[in-house]
Image 1 (cartoon, one colour):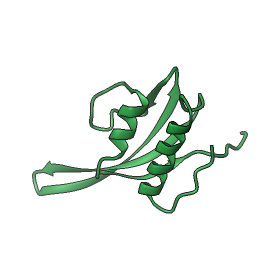
Image 2 (cartoon, one colour):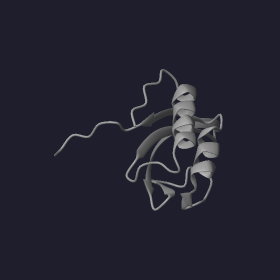
Image 3 (cartoon, one colour):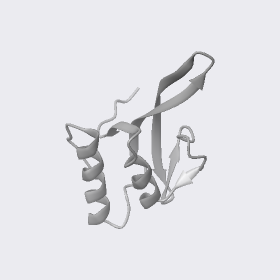
Image 4 (cartoon, one colour):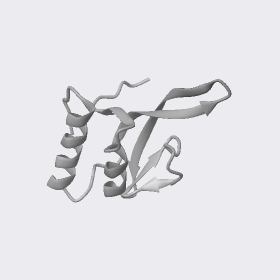
Length: 100
């Protein structure tokens, strides 16, 4: 699957369309995204920019972190709903890999 998108919204819509066209994502699909999280500090509030990756295996999405939700893994629908949140941006699907 190749996703060419100019924005996170376009990327998310392309991913959702791909999900609608098939029963599931290909095993090994990787999606990268950024979460913007507002945190309180002794000096006020600060906006953190946290980068994550998600890997699709065994019909579940596994994240490199909890993305602030606390779940260990997500179904396709749960993951797409998560990415649709306003605090998630820079959504991208890995389409090429380099052998190392």
